[in-house]
Amino acid sequence: MASIGQTLANPASGERITFRATAAQTNGELVAIDLELPAGRRVPGPLHVHPRQEERFEVLEGTMRFRMGRERIVAQAGEVVVVPAGVRHDFANVGDTDARVHVEIRPALRMEQMFETAVALAQHGRTTRGGFPKPLDLAVFAREFDDEVRAAFPPRALQRIVLAPLAWLAGLRRPLDPWPPAADAGTTDASRHALQHRTARQLHLRRVFLRRLREPFRLAISLGTRS
Image (cartoon, rainbow, N blue to C red; front, side, top):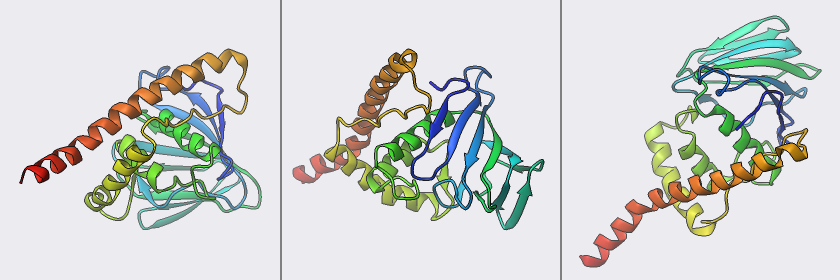
């Protein structure tokens, strides 16, 4: 569970995420973060959508470029960009200095867990150089956080067809390998117990998730051997 003031550092993309308001604090209404992004860098991933969430970006420092639908927006310090739910978008730091952006996401859903998982994968070398999850982890990530984020292309039905076998294969190759918790940039002994608890919970959730994912394949194999 994220805590106010906690900072996650992504070694692949260079981004730093500091939680300013959490789902627990706001009764699930929003999660708020300060995003720090080095010059010339972008948040991992292609154009994407948040099917049920609105994002509000307030640029505090630097110059950010947003693609939102067919629009291209360059925002400087003091400017605000709002992305409605379901609108495809991405964003990057196009300035010569580091950018800092205050981001609010409504409702919170499981965005905190999604941020933690994405950073943890990068910290453990399970992403590309830009921070995008490698294929097997991407398949599980996409299923786990389908309510929070989806790729804008290709169509969702095709994405599910392509990713389902990869998620199944991920379960066969690493059935007991949980996504490790992301390390807080300021982790102390006081937070170690919370990290251990989160690891155990993630292991349980992934076991349940992968077991359910394999059930249709097992049924198909069983019917095939009977015919």
